[in-house]
Length: 332
Image (cartoon, rainbow, N blue to C red):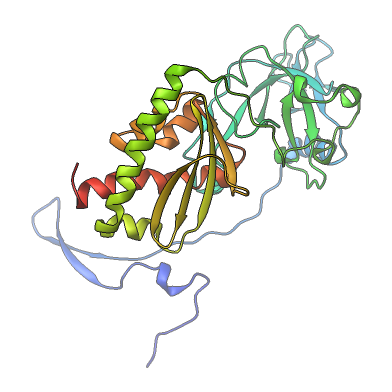
């Protein structure tokens, strides 16, 4: 008689079937077997629903206690826990705020946010006129490329932005530095994501000097030497297999291009006619360090390497594997 039956999850997600023996705490042997438990459920926002319904309607609200005057943001409850559960009243909140503390930038997210990193999140002081108020935890976004240190610092003034399509979740909103909002839009309420340009950030300017020119010469020599060893490195060729990228780099010592095609890396002076993206770094020694024992991902995280978007960031782990692969197969 067959015991096969259809399961909600694909069978390849299951642990192997079987029973094994394990030592028991008391004298003897226990039998151990593999099993699984899958739980699907629905839940409500409860009292928070009122806050999220308001977000869906492009409104930002809090709950204010008429007795102690504290304002809760988000409106987590409508009965004040400090005043014997006095009924709280709804208050409209401004679409501007101040960052309460310098925001962390997430590089390695949990499973729910894979593909979204790097991103910044922080606590926004919205109800600034209230004597006592909570801060609103929110995503923080910039129109100037990837989030990096020095943008979302404590005290920076922020503007509230609504997604064009909203569902009634905290992800319906995010905040951008007010200085990045065009003057003509700073009083617009609500301000929508489509009102701002996130697709074509302007690359920062770099100042050229002789020290950086020397650093670029050293970096180009190191990168060219590494590129010449890739043909002898099975690991490096595997890293580059089926990949084609043309990356333009602007540095304080001059410009250069990195091309990846047919399992090979080519580095040349100057900018290409077209590229996948443009990256900017003031100090070209970043690339010398990359070849020896550094990381372009670290440079981007630390803010010394400017990138326009997440797609560009996704190329860095591939590049970071190359020096290690070459060293393992070919040596120094």
